Length: 357
Ligand code: SAH
Image (cartoon, rainbow, N blue to C red; front, side, top):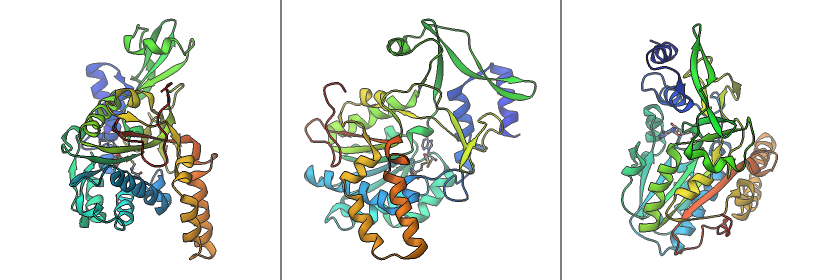
C-alpha cells in the first residue's frame, strides 16, 4: 500500500488529520516516510543545508563549542551531540576542526539523535572513527555535560496551524476530496494555548505551533543547567511565527505538499520564542546566522582557504561564503539561539538575552 492509500484509509476511519499528524506520517512513516526512505540532501536531493554548502560552517560551530567547553573548565567526559545529523557532514567537520583543541576529542562521547534508519547508515560510514551512539529520543541522552548542535532539525518537526476567526481559531486539517488529499479548516474553537496570540494577530491571520519543540527544549535545557554545556540551535524562522510557512521542497524548488505524500520534504519556519521559554537554562539573544558567523571569524577563514584555490573552485568557495552570510541569502533568514547555564556567559558570537527576552 502506498502512503497516499494508507492516508486515505486512515482519514476514512478517523476523520481529517491535523497538519502535525499529516507531517509526521509523510516524514517518518516507517515504510514510506520521506526521511525513512530518502537521502534528501545534496545536488541530486531536494534541498541543501549550510554544512553541505561549505566546510566553514562546521568549522565555526566546532570552534564555538570547543571554546565554550574550555570556558567551562574542560569537563570530561562530556556528550558531543547532534540532533538530525543528515549526512553526518556537520559532525565530521566539527570533529576534524576540534582535533586541534587539546583534550576535547578524548573527552567527547558522540551521540546522534536520528529517526531515519537510512540516514543512520550514512552517518555510520562518515563518522565511524568517532564510534557514535544513536538514539531517537532526546530524553535518552546521557546525564553529563552536553555540547550540542541542531542545524535544520526543528524545521522538520510536525506543526499544527491555526487561522484566526474572531477570538477563536480554525485548525488546518487534511481531508479527502474524491480520491485526493486536500487541506481544509476545522470549525472555530477557542484555544487556551493560543491566548497570547490574540494580542498580536488580526482576523484571518495564521499562526503555527510545533508541539514537540518545547518538550525537546525543556529536556536539553534541564541537562545543560544541571550538568553544564551549551546547545547551538540554527534554523530558519523568527522569534514568533506569523503566516503560513508550511511548505514542501522537491528538487530544490517548492512543491504541492498534498500531491504525493512521502516524496517531498515538509518543513515550517521555526518559532524560537517557545524554545527560549521552555528551557530551564539561560538562552542567548536570537542572532542572525550571518552576524554569528562573521563574529566567529568566517571571513578570515574564507580568505585563508581562498589562497589555495583558483578558477571554478575559487568561484564556488566565494559563492559559498556569500550564501552562508549575506543578508539576501541565508545570513538573515537563518537564526542562532544558544542555551547555556545561568552561571556562564553565552557561547562566543552570541550575546546574553536582554530584559525583553
Ligand atoms: N542537520 C543536517 C540535516 C538536516 S535535515 C544538515 O544540516 O545537513 C533534518 C534531519 O533531521 C535529518 O537527519 C532527519 O532524518 C532528522 N529528523 C527529522 N525529524 C526527526 C525526528 N523527529 N527525530 C529525529 N531526527 C529527525
